Image (tube, rainbow, N blue to C red):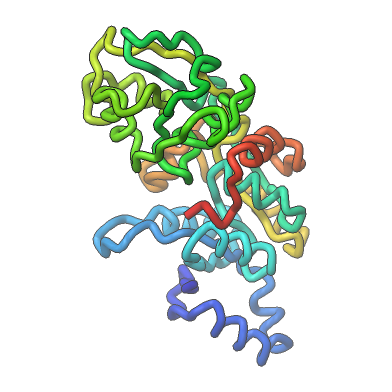
Length: 301
């Protein structure tokens, strides 16, 4: 992990930072108490790309009046461990890793944004297939995008489980490596059905969903996701810092900051009232889905 301060501090590995903290804890405690530490996943290797985490940090600094320090983590497990160990205060994550993190009982949810009421995934077959419902996928082969995909695996596996079909016992699961590849597998008759993101099924005639109207039939749809994004937080964070963030974050994710926040603005948080300090029950449906799919936080990259 790398630490980056928005005020220009040099990068340090997390191990080095912890070691230094151990040597100078008493001297630096007062100086660092007001710093808001945010864990994030790297956005990519392109040095010319605009990293929205920098803009997010600057906006939080402006709203709270506190210095923000950004720490890069290698994966979701690294982010959660950093929050759990109080090396960072908060992290902004998508629904499933947030749900699994909060379910450990060792981190809190500071804030969530509600998900869409629409089904996350849909399962489909070719129009001339004899299969009429997901119940009839017993003994069949079903294409999934990736074992780490919410819409291309977790949610549809939960759908099939809800009608009594257990993966690898009642049907064969084939991972194709992508939603578009699952569509091709259906088109070429390599599988009996596929399950994909609902949003992609609206993109007929594109590389993402290479079918025309009337080529396929939908045979089932998953439940919605109750949460789209969440801010998880260290349980050791001070009340003053927690209150400052609860006041500031709803002011940061507003329409006027859309351009600055880049990909964060596309994650369903703009124009939606967040839920402040939700309990663990807010994530229970996602935890149930993860349990059915057999997914662990270490599986999420």
